[in-house]
Image (cartoon, rainbow, N blue to C red; front, side):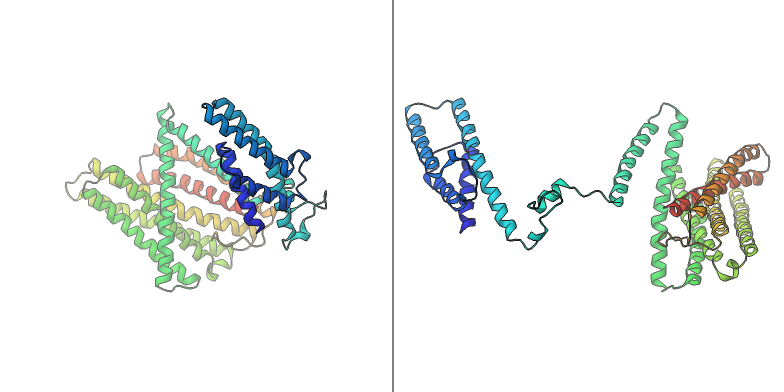
Length: 423
């Protein structure tokens, strides 16, 4: 009954405050009066707001307004001032009512014994929450910083793609293309691998490594075949470049995880020289595959008219760039794994879902120092690649570029896992 009466008073007051019309009927004021009578004992209202006096004055105002409306049209400014006065008159009453209603509600709550703070014994929970806000968690702070940095990166990219230098714009678009290609390749590779594991019910490290080896071989053949088909069908240059880059990254991911799975097998993980032999075997296997593929491609290009035209040269360069990406991903990741094993004394998990084990600050510092040494080696290999570009032999040029790519990929993987060890 008290809730219904209070609701009637609230509706009447809302209509009065929103329209400013005092001729709504006496029922609204009677609802206000009933609510005030229920809560008047503890509303702590001032003496000027007595119930009978308030109702009597309201009736007089209604009669006065009716007489004025019957004589002439009311002035809008006078009505506005009257409405504001009525609002100011009703505000303390309803604030007192709301405060009383909140107190009665909190008195009946089961957690009323929690309504204490350090400063006041009569404080209620909502006062405690307002006076002492909860500090943000580390996760929330990290998310906030990431969002702000993402905005900064987007603005930097926006300025770089509109720079007045052609080289800056070209390199920016090349970096964006590589980034989108890597994310797309990761999505396709992860989906394909999980689907193969589920279809063939693969369990254990040996089974996963075998599936990755099969996926690497199939993706390598598919990359070579489809690039050749695109050459024969005179596909657009952008389409050939995009397909070759994505296929190269998918093949590279399959190859690097397959090599990492071989490294942690007991036959290679027992001694350091066995790991070095495995790295040498991976390097020789990839180099042999690429040499055989390069020889076959040149024979295919010379088979029709005995010369290599512009389209065939573009195809050869695109496939060569794709093979270089595969080589750098596989060998760079394997080198990073060997370096982490050498620093920590045991083979570390390469899956991001598995946290590092028994890693301290000294190991993280050693991995960072190793990354800096690889950065210096990358800078030196860049100079070597410039020297190799002047060489007449095509194989020497490709080897010089391969050394630079492998060092740069190894630096990237080392810095990534250093961040994981540091955190």
